[in-house]
Image (cartoon, rainbow, N blue to C red; front, top):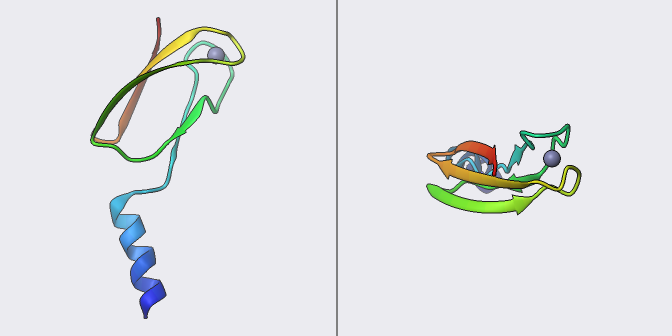
Length: 66
Ligand SMILES: [Zn+2]
């Protein structure tokens, strides 16, 4: 079954995007992040207008306001 294999492949690779919450306000969806081994970026929250530094390592997301 080709479709079943594809589903399993997706689950193993963990391609489902993770929601990144804003640490400063109630914005529960600052952005969606897909799996990455290591990533660093900065994004401005559209609600509280603060710059949020996001770092990702081994699929764990850390968000801090700067
Ligand atoms: Zn915010």
